[in-house]
Amino acid sequence: MAKLPKRLIKKYGISKKAWSVFKAEKRSTTSKPKLKRGKTMTKKRRAAPRRKARKTSTGFKLPSGTTSMIAAVGYGFLRDKVSDALARTELIKKLPITNFTDEGVMLALNFGARKLGLGKMKGVNSLLTAQKTIELARVGETISDMKQVKTSGNAQGIFIN
Image 1 (cartoon, rainbow, N blue to C red):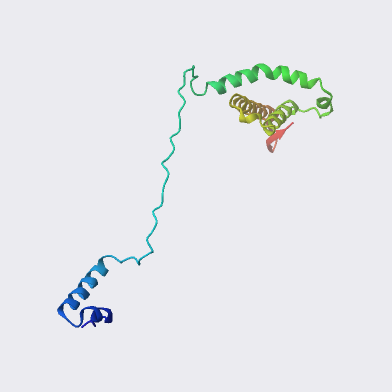
Image 2: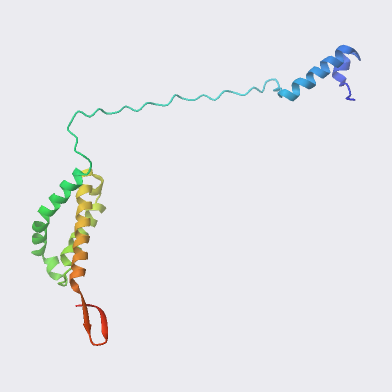
């Protein structure tokens, strides 16, 4: 049998009351632990979540993808003018003449514009993306025009002129 603690013996003596207090404490300690005096937990305070103000659009809104289509048309319109202006410069005249010079220069301009941070603007970003797509398509077209399948005698394969 369990031993009666000394603190209860001092207070109640060895009596029925001491045993009932002891048993009540034993029952209550198994259900929930008591906090020591002076060590209460402080409540954590939480700020209410801030509500974000939403803009109500009052202007005209274009359908999705329209910006990139307009940018591609604009690039196609300006490409020849920019290419002709670049062809007259001294730098382009020093580059070796190949089928890729024009596309390479336009891709370099695209890279430079992105490095300058122009790609962060929405309309300019669409224009630069369209430019890159168009120029890479032109590179692929040039490569496909250069390849010819020749069959002569025993040698079969793809030869680049």
